[in-house]
Length: 124
Image (cartoon, rainbow, N blue to C red):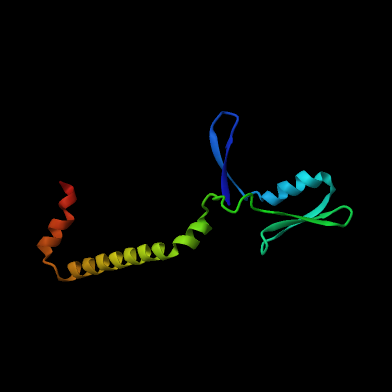
């Protein structure tokens, strides 16, 4: 889903979630208007196919230009950057595990005077 900005009656900018509009729908509506019976998306060919009132079919591409860079979506970011995100998640899990292990070891083997000093440090 993509976000689109809209303006309310008070003049505040609100973000609304709407599904991405397909370019092929607009092209077919401009060509045929009210003579379209139904439309479907052919994702394998990246086209929109329309069934017209007279029984004929027409299709239009969903891309304006192959070099056009569309806005990033969550799915596109995950698809492109999954290795980096996995590495960061692994490092965060490793640091969290090391901190948990250090807290357990410190809590079971440390001198009670040191633990008392560490727990009362925020009081000053």
